[in-house]
Every structure is written in structure tokens, then in C-alpha cells.
Length: 189
Image 1 (cartoon, rainbow, N blue to C red):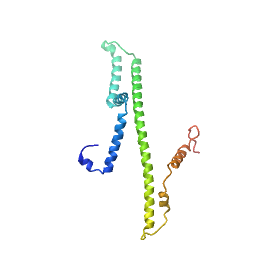
Image 2: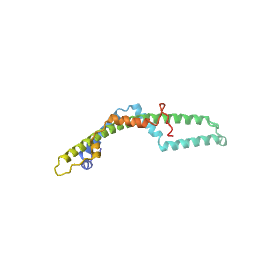
Image 3: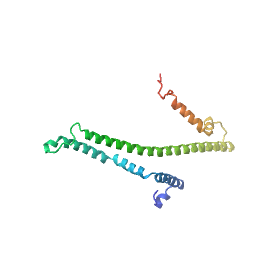
Image 4: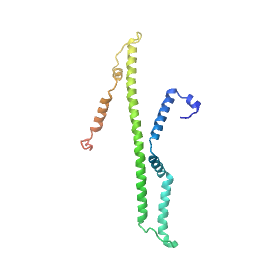
């Protein structure tokens, strides 16, 4: 978060506190990253850059051109067509790129799992609070002498807090229903 007092003053304190909490979460997460992981991620970021792709394309075109034109310039041809050495270099390059990207994706996936867990917790808490607010408003409405007392089925339903276990079970059942035991999608007829 910026130390600029004007930007801090423009935000409600609860927003500033939440931003600080998120920043602390990321800082803690970064502290746990090993030196090897940092190196691999820097390599992955480099390997995923447009400059690296362009350098690879230039290298491949240069390799092929140099080997095809070697006799014309009196050079020794290092790799004759179908360019087995080039295929090996490109294959090794692909292995290194895919491995470093997978390592980085694994860490990002763990971070995304943490985010999803926090989102779920906040959503459950919000649902609980919302139900309680509806209950309190309905109670207040019933207790106010000047307000007509009326039954509202939708409000009564919304005032009931959801059971997270029941919701999860229903979601799992709905997602698994179109699939058989082996996870193969059943034909819809």
C-alpha cells in the first residue's frame, strides 16, 4: 500500500485494513518461497517472454540457414538436414520450458487455492450475516406499530441461514449426476 497520506485518507479504514491484510498475506507467502523456487520462477518468467520466443525463432532460422548455406561459404556443416542436433536442442528447450512453467503453476495453484478458501469463508460469513440482518429487520417490522404486518414467504426463506454442508452435498450431487462411476459422461438421451 502506498504511504501517501492522501490516498490513505480517501479510503475508509475498513478498506485500508483489508488491503493491509491482503498485502501481509502476500508478504508471508513470498517469505515462504525457497531460493530454488525463486530462481525457477525467474527462469520461467524469462522463458515465457516475447523476447525469448523471438530469440528462439531467430536461433532456429539462423541454425537452418547456416547449415544449408555452409557449403556456399566454405564452412563446415554442423547439422545436416533433417537437423537432428537442432531437434535435440529444441526438445531440450521444450522440456526446460514446460518443467519451469509447471513448477511456477503449482505454486500459483496453491495460492489460488488459498484465495478460494478465503472467498468461501467470507461468502459463508456474509450469508450468515445477511440472514441475521433479514431476521432482525423482520423482527423490527413486526414490532413497529405503524407498519402493517404481512407474511412474506420469500423474506422468511431468505431469513433462514443456509447449511453449508447441505449446500456442498447438493452441489456435489448436481455436478456428479451426469457422470457414471468411472467419471464418464452419461448420454443425455
